[in-house]
Image: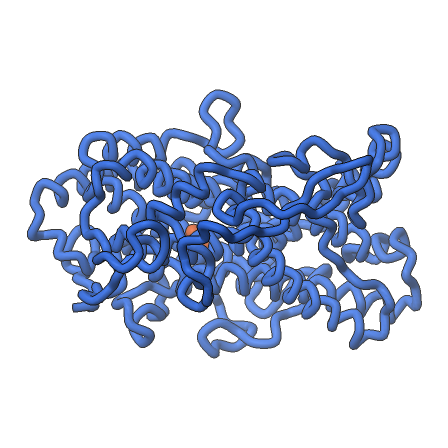
Length: 475
Ligand SMILES: [Fe+2]
Ligand SMILES: [Fe+2]
C-alpha cells in the first residue's frame, strides 16, 4: 500500500494511473513546475550532484534513502500516509462523524484557502533561499540547504495534488498561481508577509529554518487533525520532512554560537567589535537576528482573535496542535483563553472565548517549543562559561498583526513611545550594518571537510558519513 511507484512520471502512492484525467492534469503542471524550479530554484546549482535523501515509501524505513542526485532530477512525488478506515472527526460540531474523503460543498472555499495558503509558503521559501548556495560555509551545509529546498518543492507538490484532485478547475487555476507569485515581488507577492522577507545570509537562513519552518510544523500539525482526510494524510507525511529543516536551523545556530564562544575565550573578550574583528559573529548580533525572525514568525499565526479560526475549528477543518491529547470537550463552546491587550499604557492579559482565540493557542504552543531550543542554545554559552544568554522577545515585540500591531513594545514587554522605539530599534533588531557585517563573512567553502571560520563543524555527518565526505560534487 505504502510503496511508491517510481516508474511513473510522477512518483506516487495514490494510484494516480487509475485516474487518467487527474494524471494528465498533473503531468501538464509538471513541466511548469520544472520551469519555475530552473528559474527560481537554487542559483547556479542545477548541475551539482547532491547527496540527497529521497522518499521511496512512507513507512519509517522507506523515506530516508540517500544517493547523489542532480536537483532537477529529484523525484518529486505525491505521498500520503495510509488511510485509517475507522478515522472519525474528533473536534468541532461534527465530532464523531466519519472523516470526509471528498470536500464537503459547504467547506470548499475555506479548505481551498487553507491549502493555497499553506502551499504558497513552500515555493516562497525556495525563492527566499535561492542565493544561499553561493556562500555555503561547507559542503555539508550546502547539502542540507538543497535537501530542504527539494523537500519544500515536494510540499508544493503535496498541496497541488490536493488542489487538482479535489477542487476541479479552480484548483488547477490555484495550482498555476502558486508558480506565478514571487517572494518579495511588489506586484504579485507571496501570500504571507514573512515569506516576502529576504533570507540573505546563513545566519538568517538558520534562524528562518529554526523559527519559520517551526511555524510550518505547527500549521501542519493543526491540519493533520483535519476532518478532510486527504489533507490530514498529506500533512502527516510532510511533518516527517519538516523535522530535518528545524534540525538544520537549531544545529546551525548552535554551531555559530560554539565558534563565537571559542574565539571569545581565545581572545578573552566579550567586546562585540573585537569579536567581529576576529571574523566571527558577535552574540548581540545573533540576538538581534533572533528578535527579528521570532517576531516576524509569530505574526504568521494570524490575529489573536479571529472568527475564521473559530469557523475552521467548529467546521472540523483545522484542529489544535495535538488535539487528540487534550482532555476538554473538543467543541470549546464555553471555554476561554488568555490573550494580550493594551490598557492604560500597559500590556495586560484578558480572557477571550477560546474558539476565537485559536490562533493565539497555536502561537503559544509554537512559543513553548521555540523557547525550549533557545534554552539548548544557551547551554553552549553556559559550557563556555560566558554569561551572555539568548532570549526570545516578548510576544508584543515588533508585531504587525492583531491587537499588538497597534503598540510599540520593547523586547521585555514594556510599552514604549515612538521616540523610545526609534532610539532603541538598533539595539533590538538586526540593522543594515549588522547584515552587512554578516554578509561580509559569507564566502562559499567548497573543499570537503573545510568549514568557514565563523561556524564550528557539526558533531556528526549526514547519514553517518564522515565530516569530510563530498556531500555535494560541484559541476
Ligand atoms: Fe514545507
Ligand atoms: Fe520546511
